[in-house]
Image 1 (cartoon, helix red, strand yellow):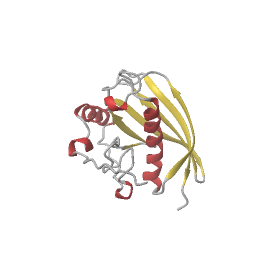
Image 2 (tube, helix red, strand yellow):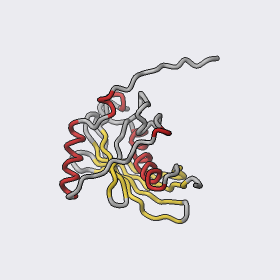
Image 3 (tube, helix red, strand yellow):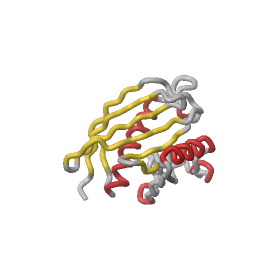
Image 4 (cartoon, one colour):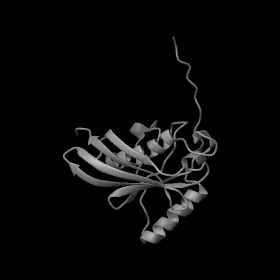
Length: 171
């Protein structure tokens, strides 16, 4: 049985930070006193659900380097909800997993696979609200790396947080 493939074009505006995300990035840069550098996209993984520019249903995240970690902003749309007006918990988990794993991939140059993720949901993420996603390296032993991630709502409350154990692929 053949699978039917549906092709959708990714619009250029879907690949850019929205206005709120640009404002939050500028505020972060002002607070830190420096321009944050965006992590480069990797054409080899252009279908990545989190950051792939050719994935028509992807999240199209932009990751920025911060000391010992990474920062991203995301604004969930209606298609990202579970209960009316609230972001789906599985997609919140994806954001946390990606913020931690992509940091290691960009830092080390090899994929990082999640071996374990411990997650705590604290408050809902509202559809249409721009959230802050941040990940930091905690410690490492060889190819095993412990990361922490947090998603913060616009009002400063923590929506979700995670600790993850990741294994770097052998170079």
